[in-house]
Length: 84
Image (cartoon, rainbow, N blue to C red):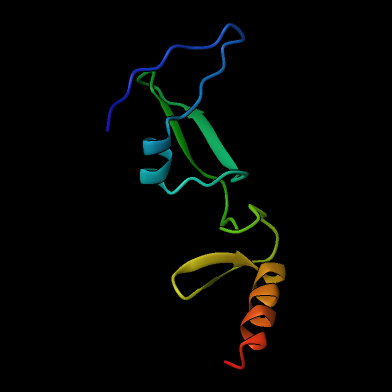
């Protein structure tokens, strides 16, 4: 997907929602940004990131998603309320 964007007056840029969704970027997610030799810029996930809170601390991969242990515990607690 290619999208043209204009830099803000402070040289910032917002990654369009469709691009973020396609890349799997979530609010609060840590990313690394690198200038490439050809002049392009590469942006990728810094580390596994919790899909619920955006934390990069103690992240596990379970049931096809990344989540931190704290959110996993909350999820287990909520599911437990339903007797599942």
